Length: 253
Image (cartoon, rainbow, N blue to C red):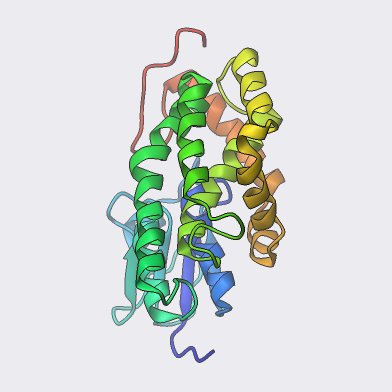
């Protein structure tokens, strides 16, 4: 596949949002460079020189020179933020990341909208705020209903899967590892639900995604778990999840 401009992605090991973009880049089989950002000790240069709009990740630089930490992208390079916006850009730039059929493309985009509009806060609330397990189970069940009998959200793998599956695998990882503020009872409830017939189709979808080479190249379970443990410890002390989200610490803490 022809590629005429350099791609640099600022990412973080534990965040599902830059993970979305890395999955799409791998599936598109394009060359790109990665600069890792520690979100728990974010370097000042990142917000100052790369993403002054809050310093969030991911940021994707399209064009310009080879970049290193503490360097600003050149003036002629395009700077893209917001993971789902970047996914759409990649789908427009590199063929194969969205179906050619208009109805399937619409289905894929509907799934992308649902992830952030309906799933994200129940997921965060379960992990950090001790919300009832069923709250997030219901949302995962709705995504399961969007799946065809086999394959991915739009049949073939697409940016809809890139948007959704990083949330799914982090939920599965949390209930398996115990990394979260949820109670032992809520963890057991989620484990039993996940391994029950209720989520048989979603489990197969999860297994299919985990088996893809793009996942093997982009998912660092140990690194993610270490960062997540630090994030949870910080939340217990401060109520801070990230730079945008701060809540009262649950009373059970």
